[in-house]
Image (tube, rainbow, N blue to C red):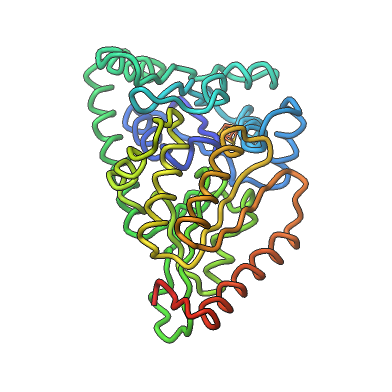
Length: 331
Ligand code: SF4
């Protein structure tokens, strides 16, 4: 019988899950994803995480709870760094320890360290370590990883061409099928992927914008080289990978002026967001003159309040485009 590997739908999920799913399936394992986030998963996560943790870590723990009695291993890598000379948030670095500390009676975790600040040889060893949970055949592991990289590239290309991975399923980012929309708006939605693309966490923001016939742009749809080019202009190098991506995107948007507004989705308790969102807002409002809305979400946020703020924001943009001579940047 195939070994069952559980992948939680949280944190790095929206960035990397096709890579790891393909990798383990090519090695002959059965990959089981936790269910899309729902109230039960959130409640389990809140109950099984220290109060001080940010909302996405609580949700991640809820997904681990969802998998724990169904699989042989749960995939919780220790993600230190995915780009040289940069780091991910400290909560990613300590994730396996936090999970083990918070949740009892877990199956073994696949908790290999990913650290691009170490040498290339170490990266090869890292891939073998991930594969050894299934096989000791290094050739097989290498081939599985080569397939995984192709799958990962296809996933990134699909997003870049305008498809948003909401809950792991693609929805189109624009309304091109509807040709007769008047005053069509284009909004950039920015933030951590696990906030934006998880429909429960974001209170279905992306689908709500689409229902309002808004075209959507996210940082994952912007060419990575362009983001890097703008991020390189920062006075001081941003050593948090998330921060560099978001600030590079904000500088690009401020200059390109190709959106009518920006919505930043943040979660309560995120140390990185508390700095980045402020810098992002300054770039958008002051330098780009682009309307900006910050949605900060925690486990107590009510959907009605979020709906009202989105509606008011869209109304304000429409009014602005009509009355201030600000012709829509998009069409
Ligand atoms: S970046 Fe922020 S939201 Fe994400 S895990 Fe770290 S503290 Fe939590």
